[in-house]
Length: 222
Image 1 (cartoon, rainbow, N blue to C red):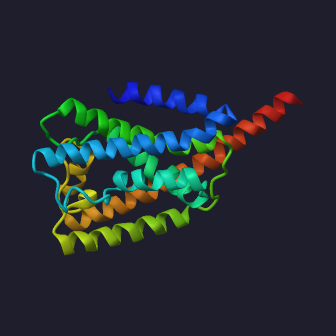
Image 2 (image 1 turned 90 degrees about the horizontal axis):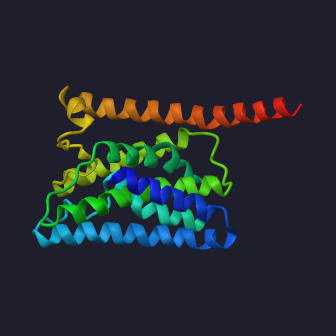
């Protein structure tokens, strides 16, 4: 289901970005889609009595990106765009590969909303890239912001007794289980290292691949 949604929404995003009139409406379309997806999941959790301080706040990274993505699109924020490209979108893709979907009375509806939320998080920076928004050249602020966010969520987890960012308990069936099996401190270090490697690798890819492509096109044109 997730890959069909990715294909459909990705195709619609590409189509919308190619026309100015459609492009003006598309950020609002993604915003509504994210709101409906998030609201559906919260309502389904409430239906089975699982909506509480540990599930309702947008503190998981993808829930946070569901709130941030509309701001990124409507404001055309380069800082939020860079954060999404280097961290938010890769985590959304991992969530599609290793979904951790909450149990509820309507699993098909829940899974559909879960997948749509993460697909739309991916479509946000894809749309801005198609519209020509340049990213920030220095990815270090993204790593700094990610560490600040991690520290804030860790403090809130301690204060509220919650498990946001899966810092206390990992969801089954995901690679986080293997990382956490080495112990708490090593788990946090693994998350830091993984974020560092991801941000560094993507920064290199975003900078190098377009440059190589432009050089190839100029060479062929000559």
